Image (cartoon, rainbow, N blue to C red; front, side, top):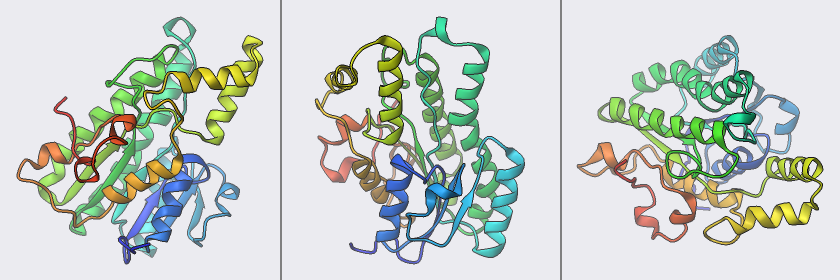
Length: 269
């Protein structure tokens, strides 16, 4: 590895598995000091960092308390990565108010909590890089049975663009990564649940997920992590049109076909 993140401090939520784990692992390999959090600290034991903490990102009190401790003990993070998320299955007719509220609380408000907790110290420290995990299923495209999920991930893109516009002149770069379907423990669990409820074989359900991917395969957590590493450096040059270049919200299948030099640029949505 090139140690592109040597000397940087990163704070990563939902780092116990899937995309969050891959990003934390990639950051460590690039020389960053990583504070890894998850609802269960046991999930974090395979990461090669001693900075692991249990964190319920749905609790403002717990987010604020951990942020205060981190800033006091380690200093403000140079990189903040918001990975926590949940995929609700179903249309509007399958979505209760509790389903809707849970989806937005975990997928969107959790990011609001970490931003409120860390952004003042990051600004005081001269800036930093914020990376939010959105999805191609959002304002980018609609997918069958992803009503609450797509709406919440569209909100993540809007949140990202707002933070980028508000703070880019103060040294904060805020980007969103919008993957297609990624092979992960979460996906395996959803495929099994769908198979059990529908009576279809697991293989058939998995093939249906693959068939709707423009690249005709599932993405990998390592591919998302590679893009996070690219977006993470806090000294990356920003073009004169900085409010656009700092609002990345590309669908991941499109990113895979783009040269690396433009992967951090966004649509003008």
